[in-house]
Length: 588
Image 1 (cartoon, helix red, strand yellow):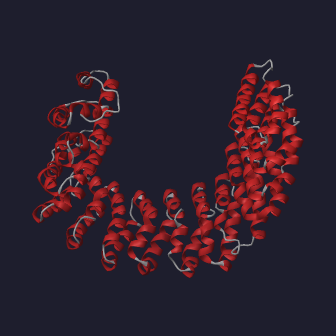
Image 2: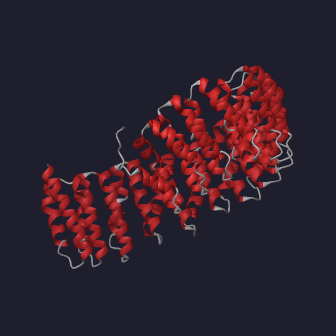
């Protein structure tokens, strides 16, 4: 028997649990199938456990889902790849159930097993299974079969291959839209296994049927097929067969199909090549950027930079830029937000002159947008603007008012987001700009009403100290922190303590001992217990960076005093810190 690393449950009990009325018991048993299998041994697992699972008519989807997942990794427990076909019957049953997630997991497990099976076994066992499912009476079986063709096809004989292609064509014309949807979504995977000559005939014929389907849910999946097939076909065949479909889809009566084209257009352009992109797909993309539906414009706006990269700058300025100008004042805030998240990337594509003349006014108008998300998206992508393309002076004049407004926004999540970008802005604009314009803001956030803002502000100071160096922090941050430690509000005093503990490792041992340690020791005399136990926590975190003499002469006496405090929490954290002192001294 194989070594067992789980507690061995009596097998009879586990089998009984599989029949128990309690769902949780059945689930637990299914999840321990590998334990049962190892206890039974390979032969008994094949002859007893797997047939039992095949006949197990559980009606709970959660149990069936767990079974489909377990069986996918069951090959080692039944004697290896040569017996893999034994696992097919229970998974075939699961491919027919009503619940979609169970079927999907069963198909995934069948694919995993199929890739391990020998070619002869695939012909003998796997292909007949695919044919049974594809000809199944229930639509669920036919839906599942579509995801298995790409595993079965490469090992099939020529006769079987022709039959499988024919069957897939029939599934693409099935009466049930769900079957056609499954066929459309799996077409790319199946096509990748088909020979080039059959790809141009049989597969393209199937594809064209799907593109003319009366259900928009099928047509939108065929859009994905355009990109997949485009990568498999020769460029000239791609232009002949795929390009007209894309152009038609970009004018489809269903906005969902147009949305899908907008989402996939960059991949489609890569498939058809640069010349057809310029002549046929640029007009299609312009139509999508000006679509009636906001969702389509959002998807198209989000791809504007990627699309411009495959065009020459002249075409981008002539055709795409006018649309970008329109979108920057779009009635939907979500369209403007999508544009703001990518527009910065257009600067290197268009070059310096076009950026300053055409793009800069759009940046600036988006920076003044009434919705915070739009302004935040511009600021968050600032690093994409090469400083040689747009001078910092030009940007900073408009950037600063936007940052100040966001920093004081009434929604705390907006304030939190702008704090996250401050180190990015600091690295872009440099220390001079930061000291003049942003330094005061960073200190102001330490006294915000919302804890998350104060916490982020403390982390922000640490990141700035790392960016500009410890000397800058000693001159610009530490003096202001020392002033704020006597703030009348204890929560703000706690934030200062947190900032000190974060800054100390960046500043180094000497600066911390000279400037910050006296402040921490003074705070240990605070009247509020929360401050005192935070002093204990801060000292505990800083013990490793102090010299032993400092720990013994200054830190330990302070902690001993705190360990005798009337408050139980203060005593607890002080004793924890003293233990850290002891362990550090022992290890040294």
